View 1 (spheres, helix red, strand yellow):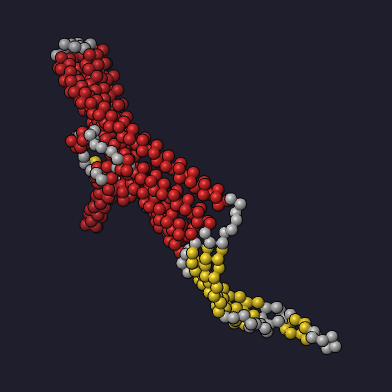
View 2: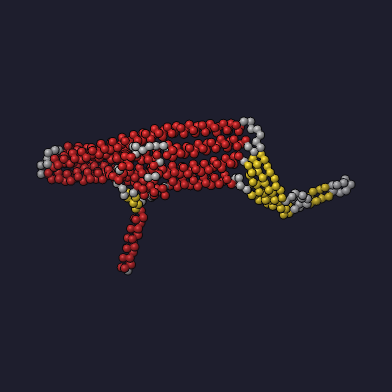
Length: 434
């Protein structure tokens, strides 16, 4: 019995370890991006839209391929008769109506239709548009993953700074408390430290919640459950390399932007809509073949079993309806081209603005980096002076607040640099190639 209990205990421990390992996800930024591409729900829907456009294309093509239909019927007059009188002097003849049954096979084939040809071309463009939309969705998801990854790192760093600061001030508090008891320092000094320590502990709890919120946002974008633990293997320092500074001097072509590419495809679709409306002036030609098998023949039947034929539908006069539709399609095309030109100008301005934002963020980052180093040194010096009784706790807590504010501004500056770089990479489409 004891061996069985030990075996069950070990089995439970192994199962717990296995479940924990299943819920732990360790990712660097590239792995996070790859994971999102595979499991993000929004991306899955975009992939289904591509599949749907492929099915729509085949639906359009199949309309011009042979169409085969079969019908079967049965009729019974329920004993009814036909009365025929050939001569007034003779009694009329009564002919019973026999039951009849037919099997009919019909094959139809579209020979020429202008709208059909343009429709296939339009369906192909629609499929290309859905594929472009999928790439656009991939880009948006990757951009969101990158930004969320940065937010998790920033919030974690902020939490670590606050925790370290709480620990340092708590040490000062512990050293001050016996000095107050023996009368070497006033109680107000200890109270001032207590207020600062409690405020910082509350800030730590708030930072922990913000860190968890940032991880939840990343979980949603990765397509994992709320129970999945995330471990990010990269630090903020890994992202401050030469690639960040290179973004300032890069060039830009609107063709790199996916929104512009989508509008180009839309322009081609609008052009096809003009051709579609013009095709309404052309005739439609189709052919057919009929085969009829009489299963139960009526009394008199002279219809042939086989029949072939051609049918031509020629549009003659529509009171200007077709002309109006062509005009509307031409106006839509002109509107799309105007929108395209406007977007090209806006993208160029947006690119320059993002470069400006990146340059400003980098300059601010350098300033805040120096400020935090100075603030840290000031705080350390004042802490030594406080421990030597040269300054009050109010001066120490003021220096501590200044240091924390400098750290906060430094982290904000780091985030602004990373966000500006991410926005620039998204605009130029570079994020898909990184």
